Image (cartoon, rainbow, N blue to C red; front, top):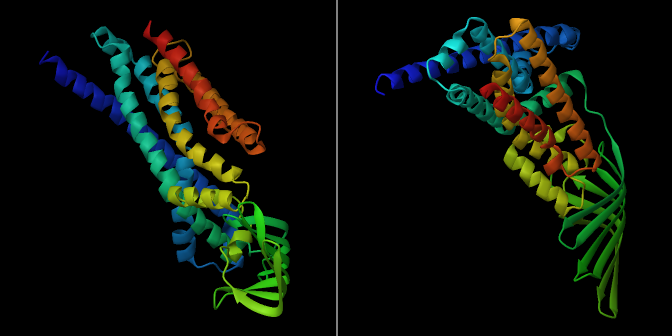
Length: 364
């Protein structure tokens, strides 16, 4: 027993070292290629709009790199496992390891350690590093490439605090003005106050809303008080940013910010489906490291006719099938056909079952 423990320790380090080295080299290569293509695509914009080189490097590409590292992590996790395991099988290393008395279950252990490292890497990137990086890239593109466009949101209904509801026929982001504004307050389901105004405007210096040409009804049982005026200032639990539709906004929020935004949207009566899908995707995606690693080692550990080429071809097919299922599940979640908490986990359940089947088959 004393002689066997170091041998197993060396084996663990050997497999884990190959796994991590292949994975990070693969990620580095694809990021380099993606960066070159992105530079060639955006070079005309960078030059024509005199974007400072420091801004291109720091504000754009330093945030572009972690985004793509996380985007391709599942695919290259799988390819890394297939690649180095298939080479080990082709060189008869797997056969030698199993023949020495090491079980297939024990062989898989360092693979799972590597998968855990990648899962943690993916979770931290996806929840805490990439969201602010995405926000920085959006700000860069808004400032230098695609100027922010004004938009007009219509027929806005919101609950801004419990029992307090607002309505605006339209809101113009160019001048921070909401037209045909009403605010209603309810107490135990009964209307206690209603304010109607021609328009409201946000004062950015004083951080208050200016209500113009207003009419207020205060209701107390059978009594009713009417108040009118031309202008008054007030504070409301809303800001102009609430009405700016930022594309893929959920991807720019860290996990604490995402949870806070979901609660805020629910309070205001806004559909938070995109944010819920993003939240559950961030929970489900790291588990793909374990599933794809198990599928990869189960497939590639056998020496078969066709060798590395067959294993890589089959591996890429399975990896892209997994990614396709993830996209389909996201569509179902966004459409409301399936709850997000279930939809985004369906690919993991399907491929988890496939991983279990291939693992049992490989153990024979």
